[in-house]
Image 1 (cartoon, rainbow, N blue to C red):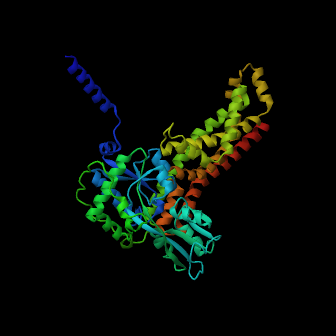
Image 2: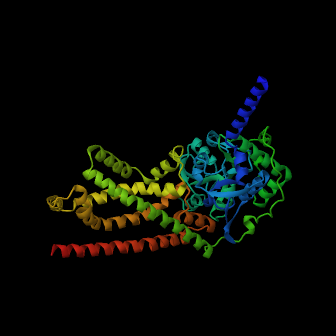
Image 3: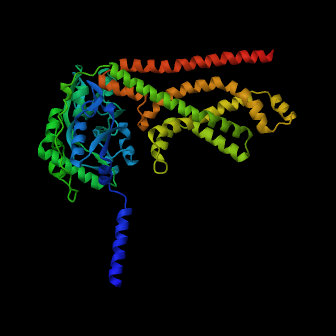
Length: 509
């Protein structure tokens, strides 16, 4: 009897352990019925971008690959907008399942994430002004050469000793090259052919400086998901579907990379994948789509971005104003430790860039506090502006004559009563115009939150500028939106100042 009883206990413990074990990445994805893949719409065509015929719909060769891989897993694919330079930090903090957006196979990427086999290939191409005698990287030593930061070309140029100029977008370096601010641009062939060689004043100096491949990034702790994606890519390659997608979008196969295609063999022991199911109708390639225009649909996207900007601005100010008042009161009336802490807070938050604070809050502290992008944006701006509002309130309280406090004390009021009934009503009237000006400044500083994946007005402008291949009209429209939002606030500040000045004159009389 003891042996069966012991065996039953072992089985029960094993079953409970299995029940308590967290689901695997694949189980988690299949349970919710979707796989989330991240990219940056600012990267534009041909990766993932808005359909010029319907900006609410995304197209691009990576959109098609993501949807085909999702079918192989038996789920749907959902795109997550994320700043390209922060794709890996956001992947590490768990904002999405995979990063799929022109990520190049580099040692830096392999150090931080697992990579799938390559799904597309490219050649690093050197573009110069037409007629330039500088045709090689060796000839460009000491010259200003533009490229994208954190790219394979970036690493090549750094090792060659060129005078590096780093950009965050692919259109700007070629524009600077045309205007003779650069001697050359080194970027991969997918970008060079669409954003550089379409300009009449530029030409190809070296079309095969180096070769590389695009890969999908997966968290280091999820090799099972990486293996499943590898099997999915192998199925797409064997069926010819991957080749059809790359051919339609004029992208080279990953086999052109220096690493041989054989080195990309499917990893063993991967999970069995669900059937791919019926293929979706192929999307139109970029040369079959009409050119993107700045029309009503784009204007609606600007309106939505402006709405996000206003939402973040007012919520952040709703946090900053009372926080600033509390800090000011602690600095003026708190105990010595509280005064020390409040002074340290104000000096630290005012003395460091708000951009750095947003990075630390969203990425640096993600293992302790996992905030959504919108919550981190509101909290980051609110905490930062709280330090500035503290100085506004401190100055306003300091402007009240000392006789006011003395009179309140003579009437038998406690310090709290004197603050609530006498000092704060007067100081708030003095502080209101400065607070309104800070609200306008906060409205403009909200453009920084795009670095933590929030698509506000300025980020929307940069995405649209890449889509329509022009910065002039989107930039002017963006400026008009900011003016339309800030001008009423400026008028309110002026009106408050006039009203308070009249009140002050009447009191003086």
